[in-house]
Amino acid sequence: MNGFLRFGLMLAGLIVVLILTLAAFQLPIVDSVKLIFEGAFADKFAWSRSAVKMTPLLLTGLGMVIAWRAGVYNIGGEGQFVVGAIFGAAIGKALIGANATGMPGGSVLILGGCAVGGAIWAWFAGWLYVRRGVEVVISTILLNFIAIQLLGYAVSGPLQEQKRQVPQSDLLPESLMLARFDRQTDVHWGTVLAVVMAVLLTVFLYRTVMGYRLRLVGDNPKVARVNYIDPGKVQLSSMALSGAMCGLAGGVEYLGLVGQLGTTFPQQWGFLGIPVALLGGLNPMLTAGAAFFFGALFAGTENLARFTPAGTTIVYVIQATAVLAYVGLSGLKKVRPKPEEETESTPS
Amino acid sequence: MLAAQSTGSPWIGLVAGITAALLLALIFGWFTIRRGIDQVVVGTAINLLALGVTGTIYRTQFGKSGTLLSVTKLPPFLGRIDAVELLLLVAAIGLTWVLGKSSLGLALRATGEYPKAAEAAGFSVSRLRFIGVACSGVFAGFAGAYLALGISGSFAENMTAGRGFVAIAMVTFGRWKPMWVLAAALLIGFAESLQFTLQAAGVHAPYQLLIALPYLVALTVLVVVGRGTVAPAALAEPYVKGD
Image (cartoon, rainbow over all chains, first blue to last red; front, side, top):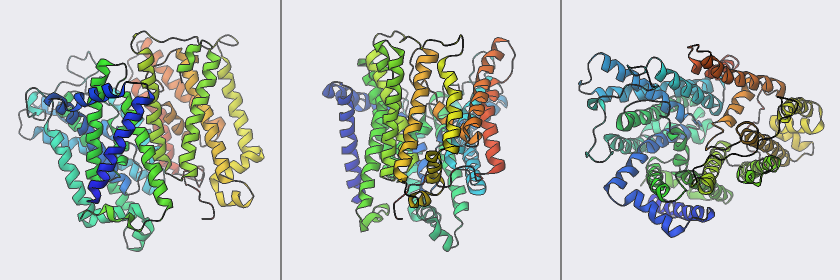
C-alpha cells in the first residue's frame, strides 16, 4: 500500500508542479492542461505517442536506477545510448551486407549488440572509477562527448548509407524492425520490452542475492566490505548492466522508431533518464510510473506546441522543479529521524 | 538570459546574464551546501531547469513571429580582439594569484581539501563554499552571455551545447590550475575551429575525431594518472558541522 500511496503523492505533486509551471509562464492553465491531456490520452494515436515517448525514458531510467542504487553516479546514459545504437547499426549493416535481413531473430541480434555496446561504454567508466579512482561523473561526461563524435564519424564514414550523400546509415528493412501492433500507430514491441525490464529489475533488486548485494554496496560500502562483498566488483557489474540498459534504449529507439542513424539520433533520452529515475525514487516500478508520466507529458506538450508558442521545453522545467522539490522534501525528511525509512523499499 | 537583451544595450544584457547565472548558482549552493543534497542530482536538475526556462521563454516571447532573434553584439575592442578575450588572460592570472597566494584562496582550498582544518582555523566552510559556487556561477554566466552577445548575437535553444560540461573536462585536463585550464580551453577551441578550416580547405579528414581528441586526451590523462592528488580531497562531499 505504501507504494501506491507514494505513487499517488508523486502524481499529485507532479500535477501541481505542472500547473505552477504553466502559471509561471502565463499560459492559460485550463486550456493548456486540456491540450496536454488531449495530446497524451485523447485517442489511440495520442496513447501511442505517449507510449513511444515513454519507452526510451523508461529504459534509460532503469539504467540509472541500477547504477545509482549501487552508488555509482552514471550520468553517461546519453553516450551509452548512442554507442549502443552504433553497435546495433553495425550489426544491421552486416546483416544487410550478408543478405540475411530475413533471418529470424535478426532484430534480437541487433538489440543484443546494442546492449553490449552500451555495456562496454559504461564498463569503461566503471573500470576507471573502481581501479583508477576517477570520478564517474567526470569520465561519463567525457565519454558522452566522445560517443557523439563517434556517431558523427560512423554515419559519415563506415556506417554511411550506400549512396554516400547524407550522413545517415541505411534504412533498415521492415523485417529487422520491431513489429508494431497496429498499422496506424507507432507503438512497437520495444514498449513491452521496457515494461518487462522494469518488472525483471524489480525482481532482481529485491528478490535476488545479487540485487541485495548491489543495494547494500550503494547504501553502505563499509558494511558490504565487512561481509566479504567487494564493492568495486559489484559497482563494476552494475555499471555494465546500467550501460546495457541504456544501450538497449538506443537499440529500441533505432529498431522501433527511426530505423536509421543520423546526427540527430540522440534526443537527450539518456540524460532525461536521470530525473525520471530520481523521481521514481530509484525504484524500478515507480520509475516506470515516472517514465509514463513524462512520456505522456512529452506527447501532450507536442500537442500544446501546435496551438501555443510553448512546447516540449516546458517538460524540462517541470522535471527540474519536480526533482528539486523531491530532493528538497526528502532532505527535510532526513532531518527528522524516521524509523520506517527502509520499509518502503521492500514490496510486501 | 536573453530576455534582458531586448533592452538594446549589450552591456545590460551581459550583467543580466551574469545575475541570472549567479541566482542559479545560489540555488544550487542552497541545496548542496545548506541541505547537503547530492551535487549530481541538484546539478542535473539545475541544468534541465535552465534549458527548459530559456527554451520556453524564447518560444513564448519570440517563437510566434518565427524571426531570428538578433541583438546588438558587444563592440569589438582593439581591432579583432575584444575586451572579453583580454579579460580571460587577466582572469586566469588573477585566479592563479587568488587561489595560490591570497589568504582567501588558501582558505578556499582548505575547505576543499580538508574542511575540518578550515573550520578549526575559524573559517565558515559553508560560507567559503558559497563564495566558490557564486564565483563559478558568475564565470559561467559570463561565458553564456558572451556566447549569446559577443559571438553569435542571437539565441538558440540549447545553444551552449554542453559547453559547461566541457569546462569540467578542461579542469581535469588542466590539472586544476587556471593557466593550464586556459591552455586546455585554447586547445579545444583550436580543435573546433580547425574543423571548419579543414572542411573549407576540402581536406577529407574525419573531423569528428579531431573534435573528440581533447576529450580523448583528458580521458587518457585520467587513465594514466588516476584521480591522483590533484583534485581537492573533499570535492563534492557535503560538510556537516561537528560531524
